Structure formats: C-alpha cells, structure tokens
Length: 184
Image 1 (tube, rainbow, N blue to C red):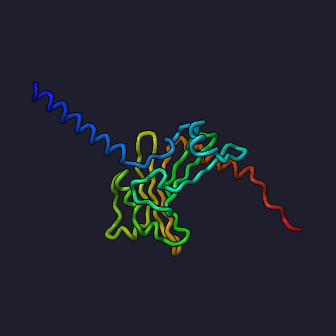
Image 2: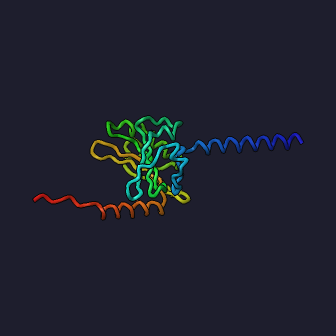
Image 3: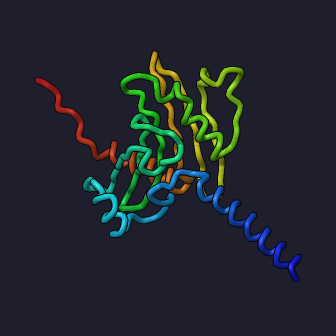
C-alpha cells in the first residue's frame, strides 16, 4: 500500500514538473492564431485600431508576453488581425537604432529552445538565412538577414489558411489604393 502511494506521488510529481516546463516553454501570447479578439481582450489590451476593411496591427514590448526570456525594450511582438481574427504573430528584434537586439542572440536562442534546433553554421553570429518549422495548424519562420549594415530578425507565426487570408487582403488593398495624382 505504501509502495503504491509512493508510486502515485512520484508519478504526480513528474507530471507536475513536466506540465510546468511545457507551460513555460513559450511566450504567453495574447491569443492563438485564428482566434477572435473578444471584449475580454479589448478590456485588457484596448480596442483594435481597425481600418475600414477590418485590418489591424498592434505592437507591444515583448516583455509583456515573455517576461522570462531576458528580452528588453528592443524586442517587440506584433499581432496582425483581419475582422478581429488573429492572422499572424511576429516576435521582432528592433534594430532601428543599432544591431544590439540581434547581436544579443536572444531571439535566435528563443527560436531554437522553443521551436527546435537548426543549423547556423560554424559561427551563429553570422547566420544570414531562415528556418521553417511546420507544426499542427501553424507554421513558424525564424528569419535573420543582414541588409546593408542592419540586421532584420523575427519569428513569424501563422498558418497556411490565415497567411492566405492576409495575402488576399494585401492584394485587395493594393487594388483599392488610389494612385498618386500626376503633376501637370
């Protein structure tokens, strides 16, 4: 009887520790891809700044959703919505002032830890490429590329279905954009 109790206690302890590590494996994003922005989200984050076609993008400092990863104010999370549905989430290294966000290697380390290791060559500091992970009902792209003297680095999360909706919206918005008036 005591052996059974110890086994049950040990199993419960292991399950508890595993669930704790899984829960803390990723940033706690506002919502999952495909979910609708509800009144509860509006109360917590404010209203979506939707345009006349229902498109909205909102940015937050990453520490609001990722407090345990050492991200600072140079890391942002951008959410893209169409008709209040979340189509994409991006975790971005803001290198607008300097390259310190990318040079810290924090975003690359996060991508490897959360989504899986990938080949970065002999010196990861010079990695200039992208990696794609296909997950159930979503895909994740880590991109790091040098343009001139400035790094662009991000993790992009979406799904085939919602990425297609975003592309359709962008194509439609290009069609309805007024052409600049010609000077006479």
